[in-house]
Amino acid sequence: PGGSDFDLPLDDDLELGAAFDVINEALWAIWQSGFLQFDLGQEDLAAIDLSSYGVSNLAVQTDFYYAPVATICGLNETMLRLQIGDLYVHAELDIMGMHWDVGMFMFLEVDANLNVQLNEETGDTEIGIELVSFDFVETEIVSTNDVLVGKEYLVEGLIKDTLIPELTGSLGESLAFALPGIDLSSLAEGMIPEGTMITIDLQELDMVDGYIFIAGGLK
Image (cartoon, rainbow, N blue to C red):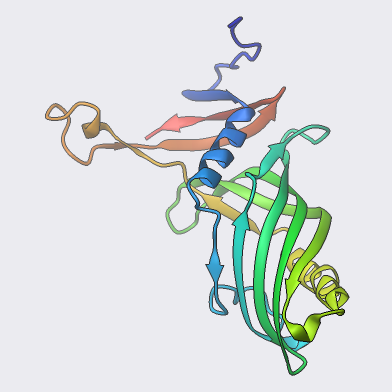
């Protein structure tokens, strides 16, 4: 009701504008589907090298009790802040000759930058998410095995003093994903040859006055 207060500049062949809330709607749908429940073993966590700290056989299970929330309040045009509350983590690992078995809740704020990246392998442009900083990290230990009773501070220290700095060392690296193509034959069965695809040639991605703006062409 009342229409939109965002006007497309009409400078490109294809322009899309959507209220920022669409990101939170997508996050909620992803959370509701159970996609954020992970069961990760040592091979899945190879990018997090904690061997120099004597950590081995790391296994992590996650359960998001609430959907992550994204906000752009007080940030520049391509930044967003991801707020994660009540993330339950069950972790097992070997360290200093001891086997740790820990259950905890984590509360995080992560700042990220959205940009357009070129995939050199495919030649296609993709949406990139560049991690910038962990602004807030809190933990609450709710269960441990006997070896850690009364030593919960060791777990909190490992997370805040070792794990988060290790992850922070990878800041500046980006995750990237391509916008999915549309199979036109599925829109007009029998009229368009099967496998006829249309994809977005992404050229610009911005946050403008609470809206996500995407511009480019079709190919």
